[in-house]
Amino acid sequence: MGRILDTVPSSSNPGKTYDIIEGKDGVIYCTCTAWKMRKTCKHLKEWTQKNLTPENLVKDDPDSLDEVVSAEVQKLLSK
Image 1 (cartoon, helix red, strand yellow):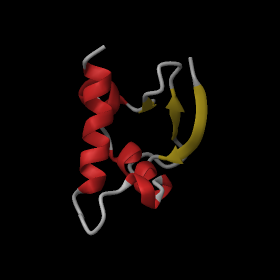
Image 2 (cartoon, one colour):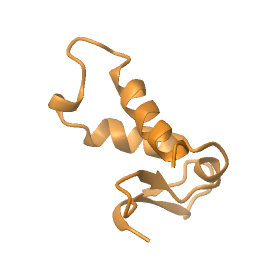
Image 3 (cartoon, rainbow, N blue to C red):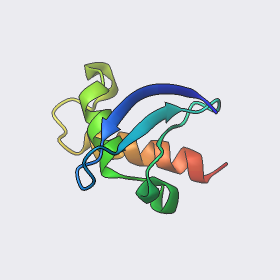
């Protein structure tokens, strides 16, 4: 397993939480079912948006968050 970066609440199941984890391979993932099935989820997107630093974003590009998340997913799928 990796390092737990954060625990986020479920929006559809009160009292349920999911962990955002940085794996030993450097990939950041979520413990929810959506991430396990599709390798993306709203929890990870929201966490990434909240925790990205300005230097990780493409200046003046509103789609840069999706690009960063997509790149992380591609890294995971290529392994």
